[in-house]
Image (cartoon, rainbow, N blue to C red; front, side, top):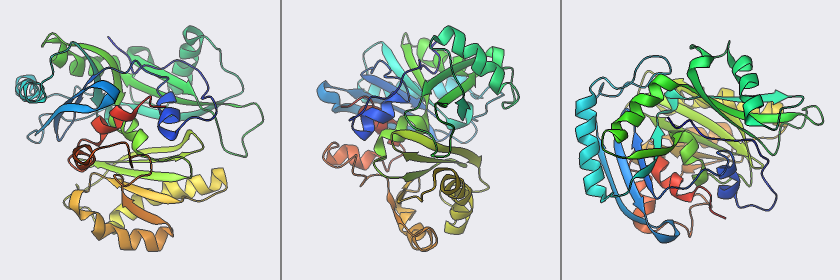
Length: 332
């Protein structure tokens, strides 16, 4: 199987934001083919030279066909999801063998950890991470895939010399269910990552920026700063993109902002929203008043300007921000 791949290293200086963000995934092999399977639908894309989007497709799924969970099997009807995947791969013109596979955030638990020291060799570091996380996840860490990276920066109050680690863990049994859908179609999975981690290159980390990303009834809130992921929070809501209110969203993101202010001694400079479609304007007024910063869709990000064509930019608002984000991973 392919884990959520990462090996330890530090981000070098003078990298563009997208390049630094790709370092969180430890420079994964950048396949030209990408597939996302989530609760709301299936997407696929084929990248050409210079990572230009040459083909893409998205198909919504009936509610309940994919039920993301970190513990239980996720795909209730393998045949139905497989048929949707067949249609998407055909429409996208995907003919190659090796894919990057994007799976729901709920499957992958993400942690920001601090160590006095960490072994340089992954074979020694991973058991330490499993031990550290054993009481923080609702499954056996021995039956899991663990990936990690050493981040370039930590909170100002952190002890000098501390090692700041971004770690991701997921049950192997659940990852295999997603991988087997592609393998049944004679496709290989070269990399597995969660959807918000795939989306991060759409966010500019040159100043503290918050991304609030809604997928189904799951809201993932991340704050990036100085080449590091500073806050990661994934929560389940009572509503979806069609029913959530601005106050609901504010109540969910405020704890992340308060924690960031306390630990990093600075505030968030901008908020980017994803997954709300045409409803963004309904949220902007209250959020800007309460958070005292600019609030806008993820598309106009400084990272995106000049790097995505009109069609690619439009796709970010069509439930394909993770796929488009994957296009930008690893760019210099």
